[in-house]
Length: 120
Image 1 (cartoon, helix red, strand yellow):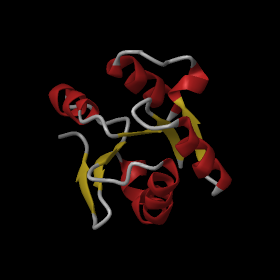
Image 2: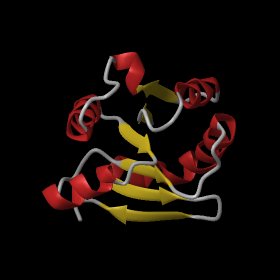
Image 3: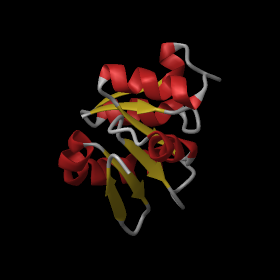
Image 4: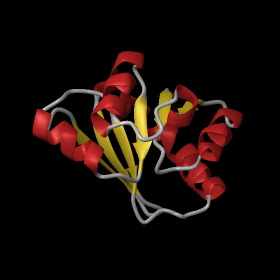
């Protein structure tokens, strides 16, 4: 699974996910810091990457546009430390792979993952 880590999360999250064997890149690595959410979504869609963020605007853009992609993982009530955020993601990614591949918004907390298939 290919992931695009939004600027609302540390670039360290992307590095830790890479260390765990996932294909992750931070928006800063693509010179997209400060870019509009719609631009980040376009890049993710073109590169077939799932956006990972704490910013709920991504889900709103998908719902308003009734878009089938890109998938988005929203961390909610998640730990604030990058290593704990990465650990939460690593623990959930294998279980979410089919949903992400099909197109989904995933709200991920420490307690559970809530999946909503796209388009909404």
